[in-house]
Amino acid sequence: MSTTLEAPASGPTPAKRRKPQSLLEAWPALLALCLATLVEMVDNTILQIALPTIARDLRAGTTDLQWVTAAYSLTFGGLLLVGGTLGDMFGRRRSLLLGLSAFGAVSLGVLFIDAAWQLVAIRTLLGMAAAFMAPSRCHSPSASSTTTSCAARRSASSSPSR
Image (tube, rainbow, N blue to C red):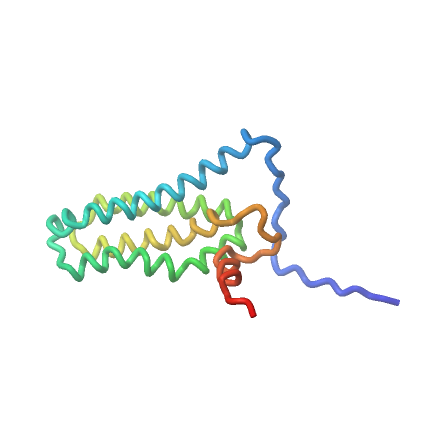
């Protein structure tokens, strides 16, 4: 007599998504992912080009400019695994849309800054929003069906084999 033990469900099971039947159906998803990548890359590129103007207009010193550029990267890198985990828990589409919406809303905050510390705060919030967008962009359909985040898969694949 054999009995099978089933693992208890740890949360809601994700709904099965229908695969696109044609390339035409896949274009909206591809465009959304490209938009997320474009938004992040353009934001970082514009910042690098605008640093001399930022220094002059906000009377920012070298230390302030270093914090302006580093705040985004530190927050993005620090919260990337959290963003991946939340994307796995609540859905990558929802995580991407939340990240894009937050990125856009926080970007508008640049219009109201008067000091370098405010720009550092905004760059920190932008890094947080980008951390929620990135795991949604790097998920590949060929990845395993288990709920592991993209960053966890990347770190597992980059570990040296014995």
